[in-house]
Image 1: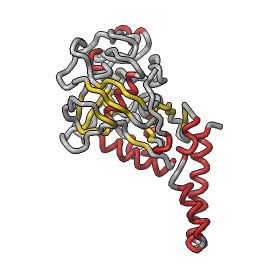
Image 2: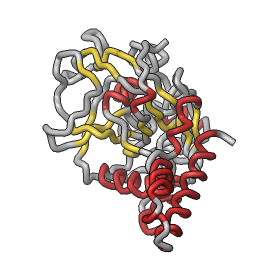
Image 3: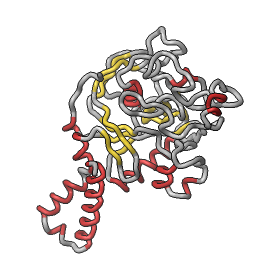
Length: 307
């Protein structure tokens, strides 16, 4: 049994015990017992994370450990199709974190949000959930935290690009060019249709994403960081400061939220690691979903360069 599943079950059991004891009014009069219980309740499954490079929660959501490190965020001036907002600058991620290996799937969304929130979430269970607003993602995270006790969040924009690159410096984690065998993009029969025929040959329907894990992962074991569906990030959209920054997350300026990764709807160049997009946090778009991160406690801090 992996450490995450063990600790999730243990955390839930402790919570149930604490509830029973509190109703009996025993815990409140036993300071030592109360301190021990609180230390377990509020320090959940992350206790075992440092030793685990991969983790799976009770819903089957898979996560991989992303090391702390420094990278150049943004794109070089000679990268084809680069945007003006992609100003290159050094970024340091000071703490390791877990990132979900795939986008949140239809099955995972339904397991947390139930049928009432599932009405517009079409597709088979292993498809990425779409038509979810940034605020919908936050509701999902709150409910998932209550179910598992873990510290889930949307990735910051810096965490997302750092994880997508997985140590690479090229437009895509595999190099400077993209084709239909590498990622899901240009699957739009009415506009960007460069991959529609190839996808049909691979038994993938046009005008929509692919099931998760259909394409090869990057060096850190993350699937579909390029293409498939855009992914919401925590940050408000704003221009970068052209300085070295540490653990950036824009929360003060701007009104739209960052989306990253490109999608089935658009061209290949929109799937570049550095490419930036945004959306109103209440918008529910057919080409936009999300994936999660789990933050680790400060004691896991150990910074090194990605290999």
